[in-house]
Length: 91
Image 1: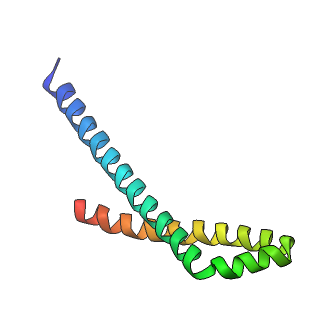
Image 2: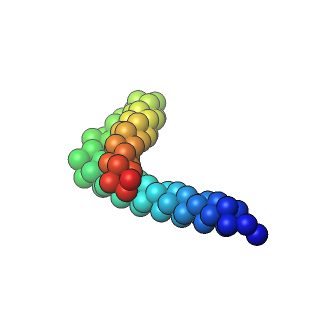
């Protein structure tokens, strides 16, 4: 094989390795934020959510969906911001 082909293979391996590391970092960060969000909601909203559940199941369902949507949006924004910082530091 020529030197150019070998250089290309080495470059592709470095790119794959960097992509895998960034993916794993994102996964760990996102998992941490999901757990933190879960425990914050459990700590601060559990009593109120239990009361709503006991009194009005339809309102509880709407609130649960709203919490899921808010969680997804906030965690995605946080994770994206942190990954931009990490990528900037890596480069």
